[in-house]
Amino acid sequence: MSKSYGLVVVMVGFLVGLFLQDLWGRGEGFWFVCVVLVFVGVWWKMSGKFLVVVLFCLGCVVGMGRYAVSDMVFEGDVTELAGNVVDVRACVSEEVDVRVDKVKYTVSDVCSDEGCYDGRLLLNAGRYPVYKYGDVIRVVGEVSVPESFEGFDYGRYLSRFGVGVVMSQPRITVVEVGGCGWSFYKGIYDFKGVFEKRLGRLFPEPYSSLMAGLLLGSRKGIPADLMEDFNKTGLTHIVAISGYNITLVIIVVFGLFGFLTRKVRVVMATIFVVVFVILVGASSAVVRAGIMGIISLFAVYFGRKGEIYVSILLAAFLMNLWNPKIAVIDIGFQLSFLATLGLVYVSPWLEKAPGLLGKILGKVPRFFLIRENFVLTLSAQVFTLPVILKSFGRISLLCPISNVFVLPFIPFAMIFGFLAVVGSFVVEGVGEGFAFVGYCFLDLIFFLVRFFAGFSTL
Image 1 (cartoon, rainbow, N blue to C red):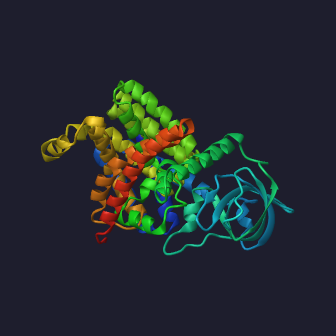
Image 2 (image 1 turned 30 degrees about the vertical axis):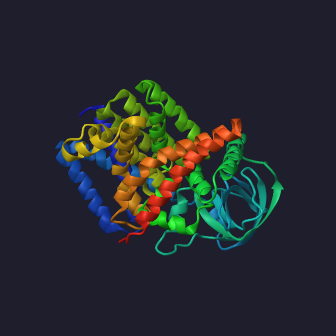
Image 3 (image 1 turned 90 degrees about the horizontal axis):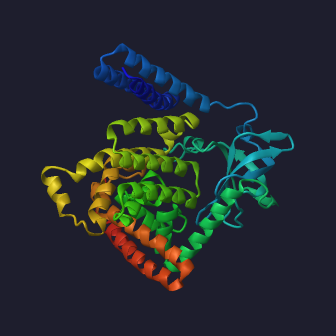
């Protein structure tokens, strides 16, 4: 058994161990046993070697231990404030989440007269005024533990961000504007705000909100009825920054620079992924998605599909070693992981697909690299579709069809939306010209979404 194979076994065991500990912690003992037996049986069948099973089980134990440690609460944690009305100072330590009717602030460095606390506190505040990342604020209100609703474990969801407690309708006052945080992130968030305002000038509603969702992951202005249509058609993921959006960026760049060599396109796509990650706020989830996307790019460049899975697993292992909640809870990570596998393993097969599928794909025109974009999009969709269906609520019988029809137009909408904003900073008329083309693609997307949403769902 080679060292690389042994490493793969341990890393897979580690990732499986994270899921096992999550099942065990939620009282799902039956599924815990089933997962253990299935994976041990698979490794035994594949290898026939006792050492492989031992390495796999060792990885499981380490993964379970790492997940268990992340759930531990130590003395001085902010969760100690739960159930109390407090008066504390804190730093707005994450990008401010502005919604239609409220604003969510994630704060850390929470301090009271009794001392300071580790961990993060989520504030659900009124819509106005809006404070910024890096502001030091005084917060007065009652701290509580996140409550589950409609079968959704809200506390578990927040735990992946390191948030243990929440506060609703706090009284907030500014202590010091820009008194904490990183200047780098302040610049990013300020630029993002300018970008969103420019989109609002170039596109009418709800087109500007959808374009902001595609390019920036912003969902604050999308009407409720439109979001409901996206839910029905299984297309909500396109307005939530995740691994799939990173994949779309890669597809867009490969399409734009299709006249260049593969090496140059990989370099250009890597640069664009980094810029995109910074543009949308460089949150931990987006950074992870960017890392997975860049790994897939190097896989495309070197063309070593037989070994790239080691790099993918290594990246997943290191990310989850740092934060063991992301593989289990973070949908963005799951989409990144699966979209990467789809690009690496499915797209080459689709390019040379036999039989009827090959004939159908052969009918897709190659001009403007439509066929290549379609194949890459479909490749990512094949692996991500199960997670998308499970995570976004409803399962529509037409969901796979709606995704296949709608998704090929998303890259073009993103291209012209981005060019419209960039062009508007140079010459207003140029930006408006690109915006008109982008508007046409968005209008087509709206038509298709509403068309498929008109069918019944199961």
